[in-house]
Image (cartoon, rainbow, N blue to C red; front, top):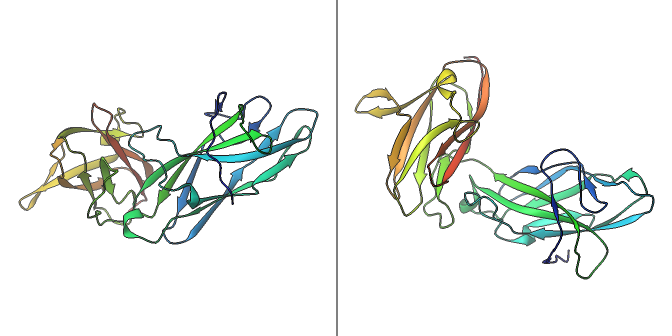
Amino acid sequence: MKRKWLKLSVMVVLYTGIAYGLGIGATESKLEIFAKVGEVSSNKELRLVNPDNFTKQITFGIRLNNSDKNIPPLPQPSWVEIIPETIKIAPNTTSEPVEIKIAIPDSARYYNRKYSFELVVHQGKTGAFVAGVIVPVMIKTEPTRKPHRDCEDCQLMIYPSILIMESKLDSICIVNWNQDTIRLKVGWNRPEQEGWQEALLLMEQVMTTYVPLENEFTMAPGEKKKIFIKPLAFPGKGKLYFSDSNGIKDYLDLMWREM
């Protein structure tokens, strides 16, 4: 597949519902893809919309963009394949699903990661394109409890990134890969939103005793911190955020059942 680096002067970024960029629509405001390391993963949720009375030929491009400094861009555009590479959409119709294939190399460094890129959708075949729609794509790889040995493009990371609790007590490890000391605050589903205290008890182990975690805590550069989680309500799910005032953050996808 031949991939193009595109310089675009007019773009519409999708956030909710169907959005249009000069006559091009997309059914998904953003995409989140779970990718297995060393395998090819596929997503077929996206469809394109032609609201006009004439047929359009649509072309795709990949832009490695870092809109969230905590989620690095996908390292290589060659890890993404779009099928088909171009698509014709009849007047006033919606296309068949567009397949997005993700191939993450088989390496321990790519476990427990979040990456981002932008799928650029525009009219035409070749040349400089000046209008279209951008669909942000986030890729999550397989979680692991074991921290990386090094992580040059990381700032803060929670291990594992996804936790499905099967017992009344489980744990996560937070690593400050940043070069500065950070002070983290816990949030529920959004970085600043409280409410986790009603659903979860977060603890740390001091000597042989579990003590409740403070609402805010400091982490030195390179520090690792183990946090124990005990559900207080059931069943439940949500995102548990750890963030500092400078915008450094990561979150845990957490799910638990009645125990």
